[in-house]
Amino acid sequence: MQHAQLGPFGNVSRLTLGGGGLGLVWGETTEDEAVATVRAALDAGINLIDTAPMYGACEAVIGRGRPFLGICVGMQLMAERGLEFEIVDGFGWIAGEVVAIEPNDPTLKIPHMGWNELAPEAKPHPVLSGIAAGEHAYFVHSYRFDCRERRDVLATVDYAGEIVAAVGRDNLVGTQFHPEKSQATGLRLITNFLRWRP
Image (tube, rainbow, N blue to C red; front, side, top):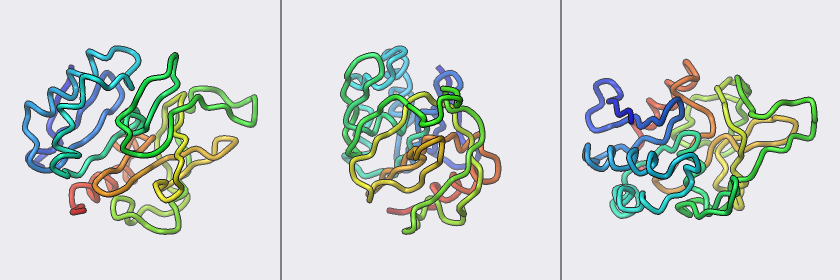
């Protein structure tokens, strides 16, 4: 388990599992809540969308309305269910499900790994403020979020077909890409998130 502070930002915790991000919770979130979320993910094993042990740790997000940024698997946990290996429930915070990437071009490799150009939706979200169409972000994933409501989609990328790159509603935001690996674009997004007051 890894647990590290994001610089001088007080209670903001960057939660990581191996090389993949889970999420950031901003606000009056205790170290115990942050560590419990990571520990629950570790307990869930490879199939990280198995969320049963995490519900208590997420009271800070839903019960108290703390801003939440789910990164990569953290975004996928926000879905209603995941179809990786078996059908399992997600948190159900954003309508949709997590499905395998099946690009229209059979020469494209899975996982979708590396840099890709973001296409933010026309209605800007505060967390994506200052991030223009065509800016690059770093991805590494084999499954994608099939969002049921277009209004919850904040940005997409093209990988021989549209893939949701960011989702959000209320106090919740998720990115399929890794902002912590996306250089200036990622730093801008994290800065926006830390300043966001939904």
